[in-house]
Length: 486
Image 1 (tube, rainbow, N blue to C red):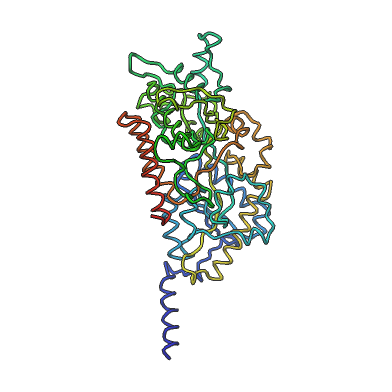
Image 2: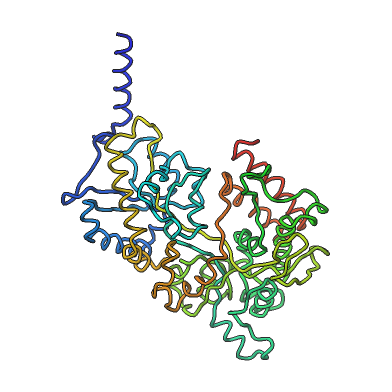
């Protein structure tokens, strides 16, 4: 009798948890024209009118394909602010509150695996050829050997150059002094071009040559151009999850990874000392209105620029490290980027940081809410994801409508990418791009430690070595706490 009472009570409690707005985890499906509605949640970037219009155009056409009609499903999407937080709340509440598919910021995966369904069994069962995906993007959705999504788009960041201002400078410059944007492939050349494009009235910068105000947000990309890392992502290493940085100046100078972190900080310090940027020229407005000659942006930056007068610009990868500061933080030595140093590491390589999204399927945290109805939705969502990404025609529909770079690297030869524009500019360099460190605590480490310490360096309140040591010590403490190793 006692056992029967407990069983009934448990059932009542489950129904109470699941019930919401007249639906439960066993009764929440909706239909339109006889087709099951699958809901997609997208990040708040999709709320902007230009992005929203393009993605909705894709969905409308995708929904009307014969393949989607055969699946008997229809997709609807909603842009969500604070998507990871909203998804956590929904997954705690149950399927009736959850989306069926989420357009997921890949680098947020390590901290959110409880809310995403591993896809490994489905990938293996359906023999999905994952080698077609750009490996860096695919791996960014892998945590501890489990795959939590398939990559959607490749979003490389780079340096945007106002070609009108370059042409204006070159018109009156001596041949030897002209700026060749197609050859801005080293730190030294970037520094030189930025100085030439800067216009000053005394010490006041009236036109910035390079946006150094926002350089702190580009730190990882510049480290990558030194063929280095900032966080140890080798799971077999004793220091996995820590920074790669050795303690003390002597240890730093005798370690290839640590030296590259130091050199990047010293290069930033040299940029700051050159007075290349007005502090008011760090945003999109300054670049779009011609007050800043070079700035940073993703492959989608042109969507932000569409409302500005500037139309003649070019995207280039971050340039290769060719400067070291072993003789002092104000005493640069120029290197040959393609040569190896005494640590067996190549001095430099063009490239940068890769961002982008994936398609993932959320799961209820409470296993009791993983009902048969929810599983039916999962089956349909997986079929949609396969159709969207693995069918060449559907993938092409996606990237042409959204003006995106697909993560299907076998489709990069599509004629769409041969059109003049930033995608044509950057695709030849994509193989040199790297994903962000896939360890818990990365986001907070970047925002709370790295950027704040580099800002202090820019303001002149601390030396390069102090900045290095602060990032190392504070970063290791934060990362270990986030990873449960404190």
